[in-house]
Every structure is written in structure tokens, then in C-alpha cells.
Length: 128
Image (cartoon, rainbow, N blue to C red; front, top):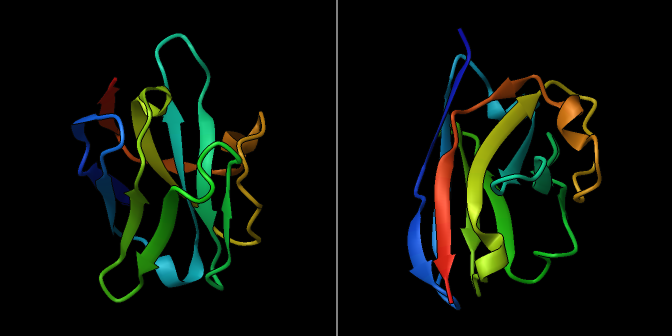
């Protein structure tokens, strides 16, 4: 059974940094499309960043230059390094996985439909 588990969320002040991690059991990151999504209260799930099986990355415009997605295939771990955090970055962050072919993740509506495996989420709260 495939299971994704996120960790690393927390509460920080604006301008701070966090690193989210997502580990997997029953899933090989080296041959998967992986992504981070987030959901704020009362809003839909939004794509934040994606990384394809070949290592290509994509980002929502709102996080470009501040967030970095990466993966360690040997450790089957996905990361999201978040710098320069803003209050509007607050929300529940989810990692997601899907077999190739991979789609770009850039924050457009409907991107979550491309992923069929999800973690339970980790909360990020940024205070001003």
C-alpha cells in the first residue's frame, strides 16, 4: 500500500523559513511525478511546485524565487524549502504523487486532478 507522510510544518513569522518533507512507502520517487499543493481555509487546493521523474521542476508564480522543490530518490523523500514566507503562504500543505507522464504544476485550477496519491498534510502558519 502506497503511503505518503508529510512533516516539517509549523508556525513562523513573516520572512522566516521552513523545510517540508514527504517520505513514501511503497512508491519509488525516481520514476514518479511529485508535487506540493496547499489549501487555505475556505479555498481550493492550489498547486505550489512540481518535480518530474527526470528532475524538471515547476512553480506557481506566487512562490517563484522563494520556494524550492527537490527530492532524494535514494531516501524516497520529497522536500519543499520555503524562504521569505508570507502570511498568504499559510495553509495545509500536501504532497502528491502520480506515475508519468508528468504535468507542469504552476498553480492553475484542476492540477490536483492529475495526482492520485496524497499525504495527510502538514500545517504551515505564517504570522505578520
